[in-house]
Image (cartoon, rainbow, N blue to C red; front, side, top):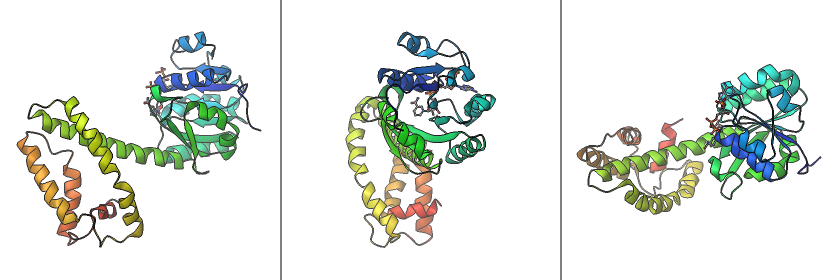
Length: 289
Ligand SMILES: NC(=O)c1ccc[n+]([C@@H]2O[C@H](COP(=O)([O-])OP(=O)(O)OC[C@H]3O[C@@H](n4cnc5c(N)ncnc54)[C@H](OP(=O)(O)O)[C@@H]3O)[C@@H](O)[C@H]2O)c1
């Protein structure tokens, strides 16, 4: 049965993200019960109409789905294990960042205790919750997803990937890996620019359009990788070797450590040494698995 805004929701965990999620649910009209390990973090939410619970057991008595947004996999077990008797027959949505295998372990644990389990990966920072641009990726129980989609869409754009509870987390961590290497590339460039007196803020203004333009190449790389044919390069590994060698020298000359460029330079060097220099750069993926 699809829910209404009257469906009660419980949020376990009132860190920055849990507070943002609970606030969005309240704003959307859901009676919202909240709990946090350290008392006192519910003050603003209670003032806005949330029900503050003194224990996990009390929090889940409100009925409705239970959204868990804690620090990590261990904190999810530390919180849910003692309340397992109260959770049997209930719906748990775990939006804590967990690895795919940790999400699968939680799904198996939940099934063993008669708990319906949906995992999710939040692709947003707290200030983005309830705003355009935020998304949450889900996998696991389709029943929970379909039944509470209206509530999920109060939080962020929602997308469901399948019944393997680890799928959403795989997307989440793959996207985060992409994000971190993009951020570290920016830090590396900013360190080089600092050597000639250019501020990181000024560099950021140039980096944004450049990174945005280069991101447009990703679909072409995707097609080449999926074809498995690297013989018609957009740009060859030998071309990129020359570029990375020069970037390496420029980095050292600027007094900057090569820690961030070394991994990709090593991968390219290895392929060129193996006789693959004429092949497409995207072949580098074959060195990763
Ligand atoms: N913040 C973001 O930008 C962002 C973005 C995407 C995903 N996420 C994910 O959302 C989750 C929560 O993030 P957050 O920003 O809210 O983190 P946070 O502000 O550091 O809050 C962590 C929460 O976990 C609780 N906690 C930690 N260890 C616990 C334990 N052993 N038992 C019970 N509760 C425990 C904390 O309770 P206490 O108050 O008692 O310490 C607090 O409620 C994380 O998995 C994070 O990766 C966050």
